[in-house]
Image (cartoon, rainbow, N blue to C red; front, side, top):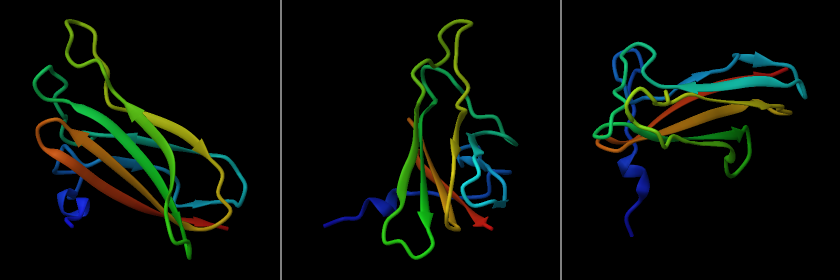
Length: 124
């Protein structure tokens, strides 16, 4: 059996336009709501055309010591370069955490595949 994990690509979002950027604080208070925002192309803009686009983001949180991550958001982008109308691939959600852990973001480019990034977050 083959693993899907072999398809996941990563890199530094400052030089690679496909890597999702996770905007979230490094530290939060337990049970206090905060925003998680996922963007792409912050340093190098990604195209948004019929031929080349970001189709979706998925966001997960893996609490320290937990066996599996928890899916916390799913963003689909369905308008790509249609005349003057288009969507920029940006997604935002609010979360409350009781444990420290890691936020994972995955993006899908219709030409260049699946890309990942992660960010540690400390709960005080």
